[in-house]
Image 1 (cartoon, helix red, strand yellow):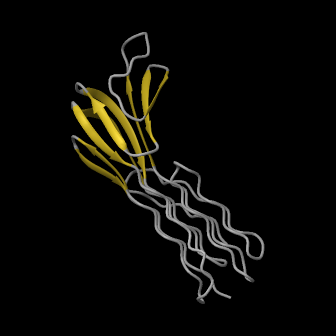
Image 2 (cartoon, one colour):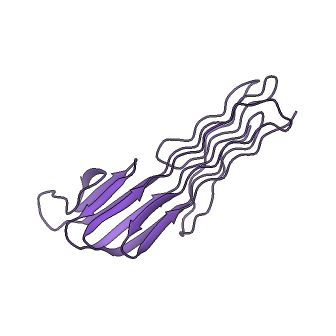
Length: 193
């Protein structure tokens, strides 16, 4: 089966590929990597035709500059880390980005959930869409972040062609300038004999 393909999102950068396809009779495709939006690989050949891999879940990363010499976040939410003069909030699961006051010069990326690969020499699932922005201002308030799930594989060889995988889910970040949606990755088609 084939590996997961890339997909151009509404932003200027394309999202990554997916897992490797199953390489032997009945072998399963490799799952897309967690929190990358990667697509699942297509299933191995018959008999007995392997299932495709699951799609990888999406992610949202928000970062902004800090003026202080000590690493202190201006907001809460997600896993917080510091690099150089930046604070980084990484959301691998849904939650709120809580800014007690307005924050300027914010950058973010949002990646949707990848699609699952198809069964029995099926196609790889598509990678989740990618949206990014720089120079944004985020006003105070809680801003909901919903992380898109990766598509789930379907292990069904009863049809010819075999079953496709399931699509991933959108990743949605509600920021003051409007809702940002990184689209889901498409499902890999099922293969035939």
